[in-house]
Image (tube, rainbow, N blue to C red; front, side):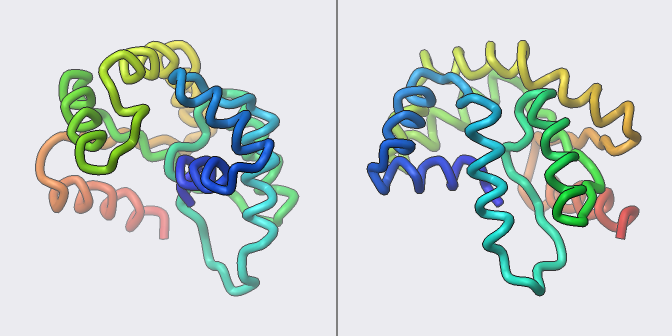
Length: 162
């Protein structure tokens, strides 16, 4: 479940919520935690009953979101297994996102917004790793190199869990 896709879906619908989200993320900011949790919970509740698990892409991005995710998963009688933290060099991140902006047309993939997102990452998202380390639910994976190799590294972590 890509939270970015969920947010872009709301923006595309041009709802009041979508307009609020667009105004926030176009500046490289994170939407408020309670707003993100509400959106996520709504989508989790609408999943088919035979859903066997979820992979969250781009979530949680703050320690408060991590805490609320743990509560949400308990309410839905599920549990989180692991936070997979893909480590990528910041120069490579910049290069990848600039290229993605060129190919996808995403206006938020520009140098100024990416720099702001990296600042937000350091101040708000990095503490999430510590939260999951304390729960013994953390794995850092080298996100550099060939996609096949990165995927193989992720599979090794998941194989240990399941």
